[in-house]
Amino acid sequence: MGVVKRVPPREIAVFMRLFATMIEAGLPIVSSLAILGRQTGHRVLRDVIGGLIRDVQAGETLAGAMRRHPRVFSDLSVHMVAAGEAAGALDTILGRLSGFLEKSNALARKVRAAMIYPALILVVTGLAVGVLLAFVIPTFEEMFASAGVALPLPTRLVIAASGFLQRNWAALAGTSVLLALAALRFRRSPRGRLATDRLLLALPVVGDVLRKAGVARFTRTLGTLVASGVSILKGLEVTAHTAGNRVIHDAVLRSRESIAGGATIAGPLEASGAFTPMVVRMVEVGEQTGGLDEMLKRIADFYDDEVDAALDLLIAAVEPVMIVVLGVVVGGMIVAMYLPILDMMNLVA
Image (cartoon, rainbow, N blue to C red):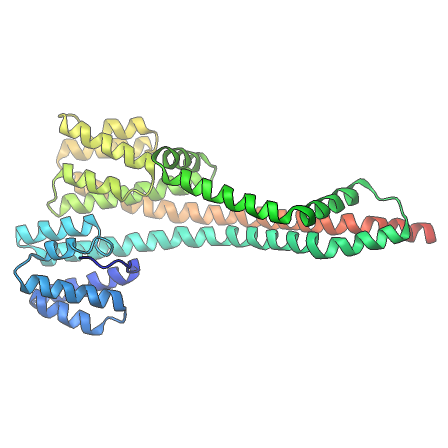
């Protein structure tokens, strides 16, 4: 029975790299696993390695032992190791697998890092607005009421928003939670996943980053599997489940059906709209020349660089926009509350 808890992708990548190095050096599988089990600091991974040792010693193949832990080892890893064992080239396959995992993790970290800053600015803006409306604005409201001054429209709007928040905060909080749960449930449904992924790909700048990251992941995954001896049909099936985007997932599955029917991969990829003409043409050339794995690797390397450039553009575009939004929202509220004070100062003068 597999381990329930997941292992961080970085831990798995390090494990595969060290495992590949030991196998390439000529160490037996069980000895290599025993060394890795002793030196890993992750408790769950250590337990998984112990399970692998017991299964292999009992006569199971390494791929079969890994298949017992689906939350730790992906289908891609299992199929690559199975192909390596069948071909007697486990050392080479583990080296490719570790390289693939390292590049995939690096790409995922870059995308996450680029999204952290905008999310942080949004959270800070929300907290600042909430504190102003809940605690600061009521103080100004009492002061203006006691002074009996006429309030300008911006001030009245901010005071009305503050009053609405104080009267209905429980209902607003409950509605927000329900909407978040409904959105999460919709996102998890097949139709919702497809709709939201299409929307994300259509967004300016962000959609470009996600599309390029998805293409890089698809081409690197499929190229690695094909180069490792996995059949193209099985490779497309595994790649579809690791695409990370429902639009790309569906396009890859249609490509698999196309191949099974005697046609090419390129047609369904082009019809999906998620792949640029350059990618489609390069895949088509790779199919015609019999060098699909090498062509896919070249596409993946190219799009890794494209993702870096797109992320730099995203950060450069989002940072000033978010700062302006924060300044306009918070600064606008503060200015609105000081307008009556300026009017009173003018009357006194």
